[in-house]
Amino acid sequence: MKPRMDKWDRWVCVICEYVYNPCVGDPTHGVESGTSFKDLPKNWVCPGCGADKEFARNVMNLILMTKHDGNADDINLTLDSRLIADIDLAILGKPAAEFDKYEQAIRKEYAHLPEDLYARERIRLLRDFLKRGIYQTIFFISRYDLKARENLERAIQRLRSKQ
Ligand SMILES: [Zn+2]
Image (cartoon, rainbow, N blue to C red):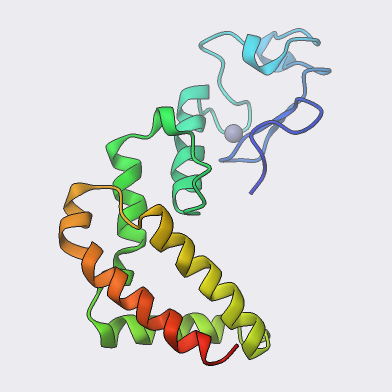
């Protein structure tokens, strides 16, 4: 994932990866060099894909939400983005057999990691979910949260024996 602004204050479009460089400006839209990204006109659109700033920011937030690391821009979280994040985690609250199959599939994805290292990293991630809360919408919390916590606790116990 590219940062929204890099250390040179360049903006990277999350959709098409176009780079807005303030040193260059945007000649195609008559933006002079030296114009910082935040000073671009309101109606400015990305020369690469045509997305406006608001749209690009919303896409960025949706992508951050599915990373579940708590870095999404809280102020702009819409119900849609919270739902998308919850749907992405629905599997955690499914019946035990289904969840266990999912856990096995994840382990296969990381087959290159030794057992103890995998167990440690996975436990850290699952504990983090338990601590921060798994779901964000009432719909998912009321239907999936209890089962998800059960599943995660069970997975943690199982992983512990492999550390
Ligand atoms: Zn773009």
